[in-house]
Length: 298
Image 1 (tube, rainbow, N blue to C red):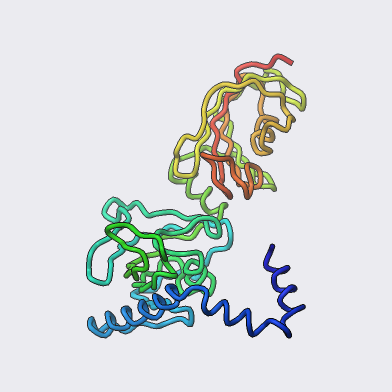
Image 2 (tube, rainbow, N blue to C red):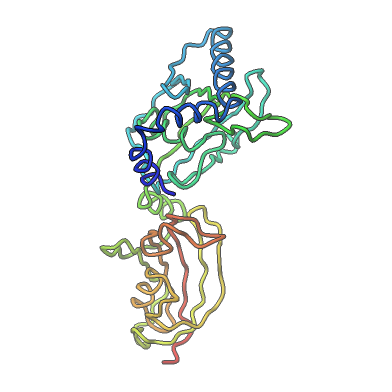
């Protein structure tokens, strides 16, 4: 039953059962309620002992902004959020960290995946209001219900609050990710279409056969994600215009002739969209292809 249906059902019988349902809900998770209170007391005691001044949200997240970046950019669903972090228990034990010394931030796709130690609610609190924007550094004190909750390990037991020192390294739309990729890897791009396909011909055969809808081709390709990871490569037989090809790939082939090579770079709207293609391509993933039309048989 979805949220809307539940709401409608409760309204319909609320006069008769509302009080009873509320009482049941309040008694449904006594351990969770107890831990909420306990976590809040633990965090307040830690802040007092260490003379740390932090703000508290109504949801129970404590935070202290250490430094502000120069950007006001906040993410929308599908944007890439990259952060560095150090996670500690309140007794000082180091639990986990990103590879700060190697400058390797962790990555999350906003609305799809999460930063370590942050629940969906915590992600929303930090970036929708927003409490943090690109370039900001902060110390977060998260009760367990805004972190890993009842899930635990030997090093980080269930219902453990966490101190998270975090810097928002970057927030990038798909277009900005593509811009960064082109710059960082010196990708030749000579044309950008209205729908976002970026195309660059690296080997020209102006006298060879044109590619049209229905052309049957042997295509050699390498596909990469924006971290330059290869997700697929090989040679395949394709019929241009068939539904087996993503839109960006087809549009790129139509700009080529037999024997030519090119770079194709396009947003998820021309690729695998909001669903991705498991297991290698996530939702909202821009894609880069190096392609060569080996032959045209039709």
